[in-house]
Picture 1 (tube, rainbow, N blue to C red):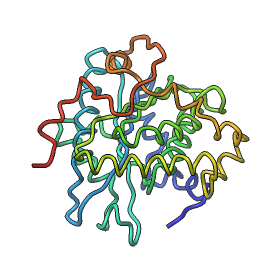
Picture 2 (picture 1 turned 180 degrees about the vertical axis):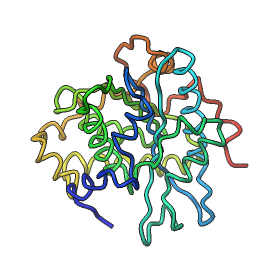
Picture 3 (picture 1 turned 45 degrees about the vertical axis):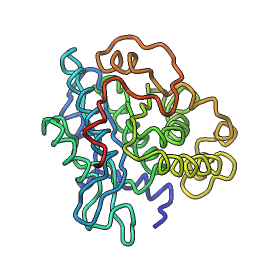
Length: 274
């Protein structure tokens, strides 16, 4: 299923089936907000998400708790959609519900979970939907500054940084702060290498031969030239210490992280499949 850029934007129309700026504003009526977006992965026919979702959820909950302890307002937004024949999610309910369940299992309070989640089917949709949601929120009178922190697995981080790096920042019409944190993966070395190869090819295609909704967005934003560059993705990876500082509201220096860098805040041992 391929949705156009206009169709993706139209998903966030406030019908209650998708996250809305008004829902966020009702939970955080004033002041700055840290929005932690946990990207989707896969789940089986029973709705059980893979091990990487558990790792992302654990870090999301830790960061949420740190933000609260520092007196910051924070919400966690799960992502993942549903569509006929969608191999990543062979159920009839959106994947974000599986992610939400993993977040609650990891200890996230129900009040911190933004429902409904993003109904995205892939990373391009996640970036574009998040941009639309953030734009709606930032344009509301009385809403405070929005900071976005995206969590994904290490092999997926380079493509995520590229997409979100072109959706947020001073070179776009939405210069809010966005960071992408890479979380260790539960996959073994062979599977991880295969995924890294797939991601590298997908990223190269996005940069050199964009198509579909991503190309539509680039043309609408007039940043096709920026898409061919790696400049905007290099600033989106915080180090572990800076990640904690972001959650706690401290100042962050620019940093370039390694894709496979293990987050000190995330103990992965119990999430690796036996």
